[in-house]
Length: 456
Image 1 (tube, rainbow, N blue to C red):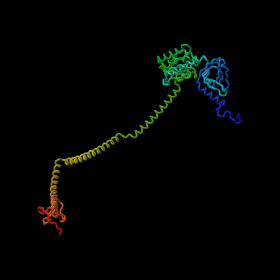
Image 2 (image 1 turned 90 degrees about the horizontal axis):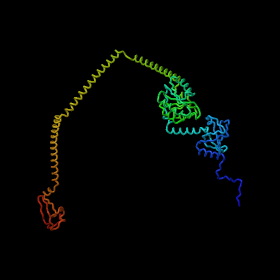
Image 3 (image 1 turned 60 degrees about the vertical axis):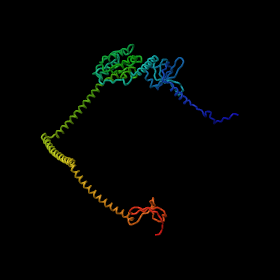
Image 4 (image 1 turned 45 degrees about the horizontal axis):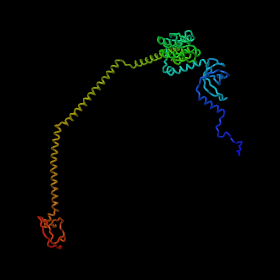
């Protein structure tokens, strides 16, 4: 039996469902992140130029086509008018127009197809020379602030040289202008430009060089994109200012030069100070210097007058000096007297100290002390012997008083068993036949006990 489906069942439950907007946005992100800017060649068709100023067209070949958009901020730099059927080369980023889900190219550069090879050669040479360090900022030299002579390498018949001479005559008329005439386009122009740079460097007659020409197409400016010109600019011992084409034009010579100016006139302004401005600056500095000098003179004058007021009359100054010398003389006499007195006192103390340590004095002192100590020793020995003799007599007397010999003198005897030391004090301790020894006042007697009686 099939389960019954209700109206509340959600068939998308548990699934990641994309909206169309989300899908287009993520596809656009994938496309833009997967392709770097590309060079694409094709034929223009369906060209549209709305009032917004943006350009929309298709780029096609015999098999395919792709939509393209070039916005106003980019197409305003284009110097030609694109038309349907024109073969062009575009540099574009790959993208997607989300509103319609259309794959498209966002064009950044647009040029006729014939110019593409030159542009590619330009980019390759620029990258290679940049890698070698020819464009490094550390290599760039500063321009002289006040050049005495200015060299101009350009066509002698072009508008560029007239603009440069006009600007230099207006801004810095005192400079000497040296023109090195060269062709600025066509075959062999690059070699002649390089030779002119080398000649100017060898002659060393200019303080700064201007390399210039007017505007033109990439082909017209190509002489300034040659490697020989770039290396000649770098090798020049004189600083080089490049003023080639218009503001939007860039050449290899611009990158190699010490300073890049957007136009020939701007190059002339870069190398020349404004004479009127410098004159104003000099006048301002002159006025400032004069003001400081006057202020310094006034200050010195005030100091001089102050010193004149404080400077005493020479005679008064001499009196003061003499008085000061007299005071110093008196102080010196007192000081010398005090020093002499002090030294004399020290001498007397030292003499007394020397006498105190004189060997004769010490000998007399120690002899007298020895006699005194000898007398004191004899007296002490006598007193000590008398005291000891008296003590000995008293001790002997006391000892004699308690001595058993005194008792024996009165007729008593000390009885001990023969060969034993304990004194016999009780007759009951003896037996008939025991050998006893009697210690008398003088001598001893050995006897044999015949009878023992305990009578009192």
